[in-house]
Length: 584
Ligand code: C2E
Ligand code: MG
Ligand code: MG
Image (cartoon, rainbow, N blue to C red; front, side):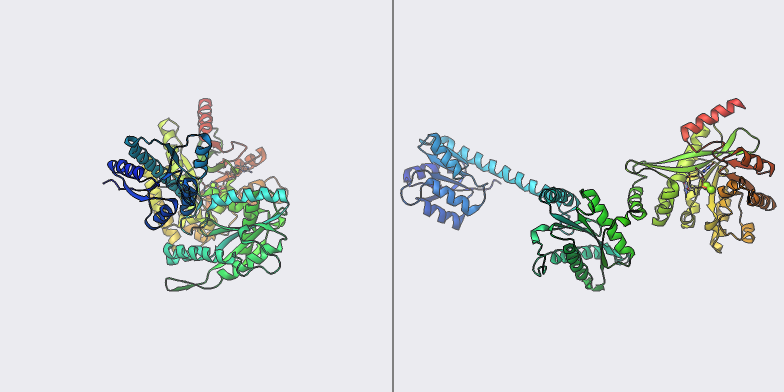
């Protein structure tokens, strides 16, 4: 059903009022009539209207222009259409009407047949306009406000920081960025649930607002409240921007106030929770002159505050720029590496001694990130292990390697073995054995082709479950080897009980073949040990002819190393295999 609109008609001429009313009513509009400006305003105040028609020339205190202006002031709403009816057609009068806030004007004599349609059209246009403005506001809210806490979000904060930085540069102001992260928030989330976690974040944002309000104003260095902006970046990360500060200490005053407010117990869902905050501070221009570095440095200082026990604030200092921040950044990127397709497997051939052709490879993970470039596995694997990301990454590696080997088989390239590195956490995860067998059957691959490289540290714990996992893996039919052998402290007696197929002599022992002191004593010992335990042995990291000759003389079974081939992307390995097999 169509909504009935109420139109207020203000005109001193009763005939015109009557004709206007008739014209509007035939178009389904209702009217209210007033004989002068004052009365019109009064009616508008008490009864409201969806549109107003005003005669320009009216006797008494208020003419049409001043009535229009008064109406606009009253409503503050530019969307209510006001139509001026005027006998004056000169540009000046029309301009005055618009200046007074009229939406449109209509000249007398009025074409009453069209009037109703005209008003309807104006109403419709204003409604559309209103909706547009509302949806724009809504979009703006969505783009710049955090839904959970109603604080400005990351995007807003970035924009604002950039703008303020420009001003600070021009005006030679200092500017402070506080980066706050709650201590132990993850634990709250994990143990009490996301609902409680959300409430903690909401309460935190309240306390942040309170801490940055000027009610208990700073003693000496008044920072105007307008110059403080709180935002939520993500999760339990918040930022506070102090746009204009006179000296660095101002930031500490705010940081301390925030810290202390947040450290008061939180009463949430019947729980008394103790939430602490770690805060990092960076200052423009001392610590950085662009917004990215300012944030990065504040983040790093926060990290230090956390590392030193949390519940404290910490200023950035240049000495902090070293590994930790890099580690943080790397971890963040690593989380998305799989879905972004940034991971790739390289394959390093393994050669049987005295055979030119290789039939085995070790799969080695490579990660290329647009921002960070190539990150070596020695850097990201430990991080992945620490954060648990290795579980999904390891699964990806296993699946990728098996699929690739199957694809090669289909091309006629038959490998005896593909070795895949397995981290301790992966190995100890509850369903590792079933994951391996599932991936093998998905790839339709003979299990004997897959070799899992475990490290000594994985096997070092005196744990019956390790033996069970190893046995279950052997049951599936895969091969097992111990990587970097000799660097751990594995107990040989236990090792003997483990169903291990192969030992990989660690590179460091191969390197020491060249050195005067050791002359490969350990490498020789490992080869002998493997033989005595009926295990195969492979030397990795073979770089020189001298090392190779030594290993051949010691009857090492297999070798792997840059001397023979570096790890290669799959296509290059294919090419190498095909070239070598033609030579044979
Ligand atoms: P690793 O399993 O002992 O692998 C051998 C490492 O030695 C590889 O380094 C390989 O590129 C390198 N290498 C091979 N031949 C030579 C040589 O002649 N000279 C020298 N100097 N180095 C040689 P990479 O690829 O950087 O991998 C380092 C380590 O990262 C691996 O050591 C392994 O522990 C780990 N890793 C690599 N890929 C994965 C994976 O998919 N999963 C897990 N859990 N760990 C992996
Ligand atoms: Mg390995
Ligand atoms: Mg190794």
